[in-house]
Image (cartoon, rainbow over all chains, first blue to last red; front, side, top):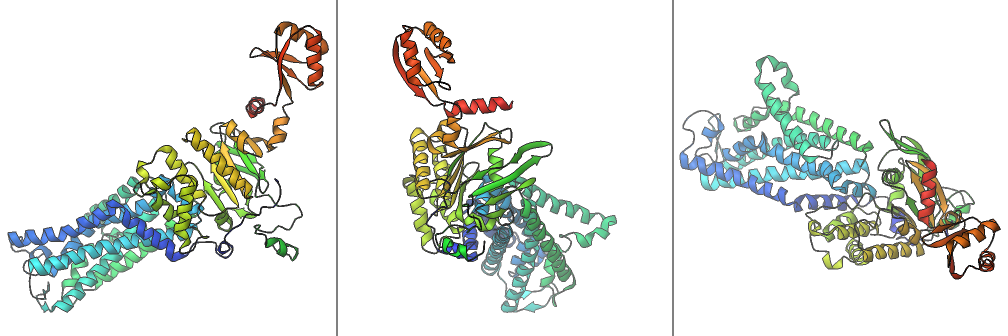
Length: 286
Length: 326
């Protein structure tokens, strides 16, 4: 019977569809990210951090003077979520984001599961989009957890009525929450930029650890470069340049210059990182 | 792809209808080549797999079997040459062919922290052929088919090698396929598991699915395949129907006699090539036939206890083919 045309009975739907419904693929990806024990542990740890900071500051009475956010948070609970974001976005958040991005492509390649996805088939470009959405969800969740825990701790433990801005004015609670949301959104864009670059690195290797080292290592190097005065001209291209200006949302009125330039820069990183990931995946051996 | 004559044929679920009279092969490559730096992994392979065939891809480790398969499925880009998978060019149109292809390549790949069922559900979510409620049913069916239904809720981490291999098979068989590609499917399986794989391949064959199995176990191929392709050092040194390949070695007669020396002498006088092998005479039947050989032996006063025809085994053919190359 060899050599004859096959008569395999196939489901009729297969004739019209060359790929699975996008929503289902994304849903499966998000479920996969959330089922990984270490991702959940990371979120749990992030939730604990603002509680820890708030409690310590309340008990010890803060650094006692000074002008930073640490000093401002004493008796001024709504500063806590912003302070927590600023403290985590330097290393902890990028580490967690890079971890998810590393699992996304490098980890899947190492497991042999990337092959399975491509053979299903999930198109190569589509795959990067799906993976990017997975990373983005983790960015939003991580930041959401920090902010939520920060706001609750701020209200319940640190206390304070409304928000005393860094400029000395007092804002009502509603507006204060708006400022916190603004900080969270801004931070999410920065972390999305980190995620895009991490995903690009992830597409070039099958060693997850390498993705973590490269991503976090780059941020550390950026920090060092920033600290060298004669390298000031480099600052416009360093993603970390404006990261401390997240506290600008707490001045009254908001100082927008650095926040905006930070947004532009993050946008460029997102574009570059995502395109690089797509370009690499398009021809990658899996 | 187009043309009115094909419209009727397309109704019978062949993909896609070809413009030729000859049924189009499920898979064909021409001058397929892959080099890594200076190393040639696959050299100018012209492989053709007819629809409905079960092709055994044979070759020692490192002969290019897996690299060839990876190029067939669009996982690796060829350095040169072309691939047509179910009538679609690879890698440009791989996505059009892959929904009809199930594959287990380079061992099973799953996530250790998920259960067997969760892993399969994840694969099923990416299958274009499954809709809504079908997903769970297809997963359950696939699990039962490979005998994993009882261990479905256990984490993949805790699976034995054989169970992992079974789960890999289940993923390849989630939906009915036109073509199933299995790279070393019996790795790590016990004899019962190996038999089951053979049964599954036979089922697929009966349903008209084309199957490509790569293996370095010759007996496995001999037992399950209709066609064979032999790779050696990245070169395709033989391909065709298994029957033809097996007969190309020429038939032999194995005779158990009372006295090997006088038996050999008698056959030599007759001009029939023979040699002693394992305490028996192996007689080549190229210019004569069995009754003549036995009569000659008896005439010479040599007692014949047993005589049986021996088709050259795949192992022998394989040895002969690969020896010739080196």
